[in-house]
Image 1 (spheres, rainbow, N blue to C red):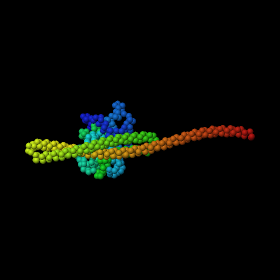
Image 2: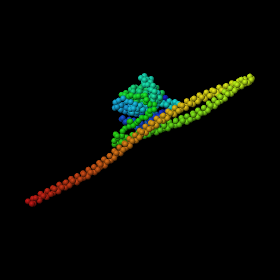
Image 3: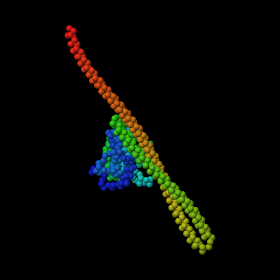
Image 4: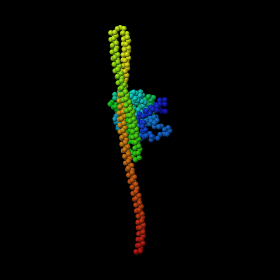
Length: 469
């Protein structure tokens, strides 16, 4: 076994964990991403012939994870190749507004997120690829400068934003491939962050790290200050890699229409997946609102309880002061019993004071929990807005694909009409050719008859000439 294969003693995740991790990516749709030269091809898994022995089912989590790794690797190949070619043709330093470069970072982000283990926090499960990237400075000392620069950036508030900034700085340093290779070679460290069948733990990760070497010929310059890396929507724009319909001719039109339909189905499946995610987030927001209402009610009850305790404490103080006054004025024989009553009152007052402190402490805890709930609701609302933006972007891509499909269909119809007209013209020409051939035969036969008649007349003339002589 090669070094790229995870050790056999590594704990294997359960099927539920693998299925949950797979459902959180956009590559679980029943399609396979492949490359046709320098173009992107999407095929349904039901149309791909598989070996019958053994025959994996599409619901098998290991099969789904393997398909996701293959899709991500092919997308990375296409993105890196397109970025290098377009950068060399452009012939200048690239900046953050260059579209192929933006798509490259989006693909790399999906590769690093594949198979990440979820860390449970108060706000729910959290996945971030910043943790694995922080390990690089321990493996390659030169990466410590990048990590320190990322941590010192003032505008970054989330681990996702720090990871995106780290990728950009590593590309500017032209050592992204070196850092990724060093990270992939330490699978014992990556196992803390990734599932055993994640892309970074398998051979596809090493292949992508090797492809990144070609990016060393690119000069890039990014201005991190003022760039909002925390709230960027990481959606792959497949329209940059789809074939143009102007090159379709004849029989190729059917194949391209099929590819466009497959791509449209893929985008619709992704749209359904995002709608389901938005619905889940909305359900979480509703649950948080209910919990917030419950906490508000508990806070009101606690406030009422504090007011009651304060009133009772005031009453006890008044009783204590009254007892002290009575002790001063009353006879000495009653002071013993009154002293006992006073001690009991003081004891009761101490208990009530301790109870009040406990209630105030519980109230502070409830207030902090409410603040955390409000923060979680704001983050969930922000996440919903990001998902909605991604949904709008995907719908725009779907409209573009539909327009391209209609254009291809129109060209195919025009081509069929031209072929039909040419066939009709050809049949007419053949018919006229046959008619001309028949006319030529008739003329030849007439010529033969005329020759025979001329010969007959000549012979008759020759016979008549001697008789006249």
